[in-house]
Length: 86
Image 1 (cartoon, one colour):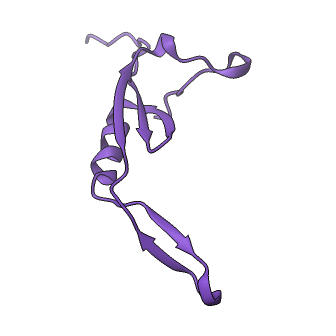
Image 2: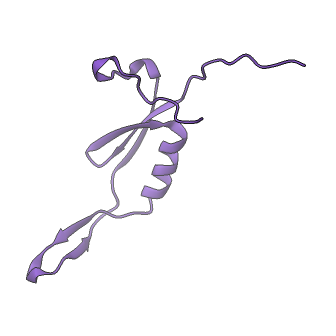
């Protein structure tokens, strides 16, 4: 019976930009986030008359960039985007 050698799988990493903020994610999850976010609109909270009201705006600016794991720098030598699967 042949067994597979356990090798460390290189993860595909993506940087997504939503508005002015950028986030690092696993590439598959990043695509899922963008699929959901392209159906959204920005909103502002308005606290007029002691009631919270949400004022709808425009669709957010979205961007996806595929990056190499070697391009990710983490503070204090911690691993970036550790594999969370068991």
